[in-house]
Length: 439
Image (cartoon, rainbow, N blue to C red):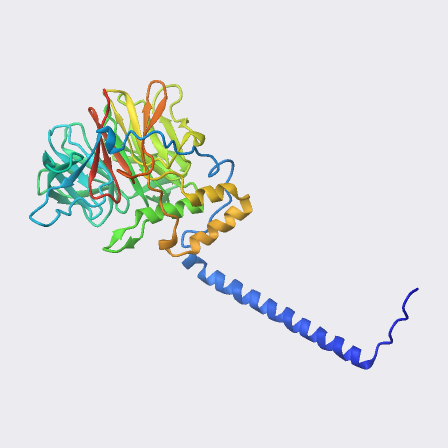
């Protein structure tokens, strides 16, 4: 049985009118707040995201990687193949010249000398190597400043085959060189800081090199092959030192593939782009016949090959794909005597990366926005891990050399292969690692 409808009174009408006014005020207030928020976001956008926000990712990028094999520990001290080179002590003080030596450089015309490129922009030599009396894993060396390389951040370098000219990949200055390193009168030259593209009708476009990362020199032509990791230029921190690590993390979170592989020809003094659209183009190495270069796509994460000659000239090939990568590949080098190439990894896949991989695309995009808004000290930290990837050039087979927990050696960013040794550089370690390869 239905209930009789209550007759609406004037009081009811007044209450409904009051509620309607409140709703309108709330709607107007919400609209004004939304407009104000939009204005603030618009004005602050360039401050919060100076290089633009992240983009949706396509395919399996970020989602595929290999778990760490904790049973492989070839890099740990217990096997007796890994050592560390420190600067020789002066009295009670440490010789503090070995700071962030990402790459070890050898001059093919000199024996018993290693060169380092440090975070303070110095070219430092290591000589007079002696085993430490108290620790069998330590080698001590005399450190000497050879040259100040300028107000940049040298990351990679290599001498020409005659040992006279040192080319340097500088994250701030671009591609640089010193001719006749031993001559104190020789100057640091900026070879390339931008690329010019001719568009016809007398018009041209300039593309700046914002993060030159690594290089190698062709043994046949002496051409310089180098990487421009990202359009993200490292900013300065602390002692006016470029923060290359944070710039790479921002590049990872943005997800925009702006890395490039380039070639500089000393005979023509011209630079050309070989490959582009790379998720952080990092280490690069050339084979003994200069038929191809291998390079690291750090946030692919993949090892890629660019063919310089042959039927596939100009093509990019995947050598090691994401599902087989335990970490992020960084510096690379090839041993032309053994036909083996090497890539080092400063970190295994970080928890933030794994979290992004587990989320739906729209939530992962939102989380990347959120992380980019945080101060740099809250950016995803690297994982303690020491990794070297050995690749057989002839068969493309590979295997890992690991310190899986990073307890003895970790944060490896650069590798130089020479005879039966791998010299291991780092952005953070105050020493140079040395791994003696098995026969």
